[in-house]
Image (cartoon, rainbow, N blue to C red; front, side, top):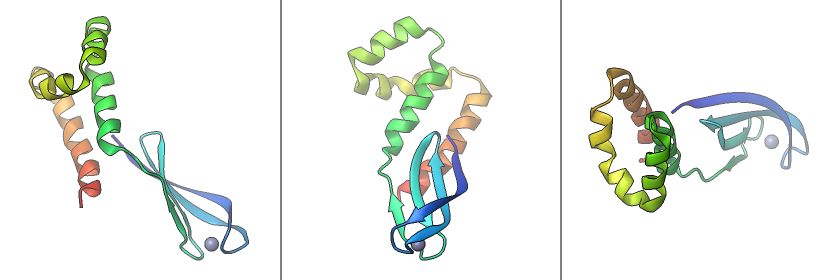
Length: 109
Ligand SMILES: [Zn+2]
């Protein structure tokens, strides 16, 4: 899970002109757009845990067919069993989870 910041020239409704905007993305989803001149900020509601689980699911789904069926059958059950599956995965995934946790923590203030 990654948080990315980008800058782009967009029309600001408050400044009434094109200004430099700071755009924040979580993964591929836009989280917020802020005018760097007047600091008008538009936040997009990101369901951070949903994004996270979706990503974890994609990463660990090495047996897509069975996992997908389970996933569809009972999403909550799938998530509650996730830690057990994750533990059997290599260190690389644990490191990834730690990085993701840092991003998620920002949303849990
Ligand atoms: Zn502005």
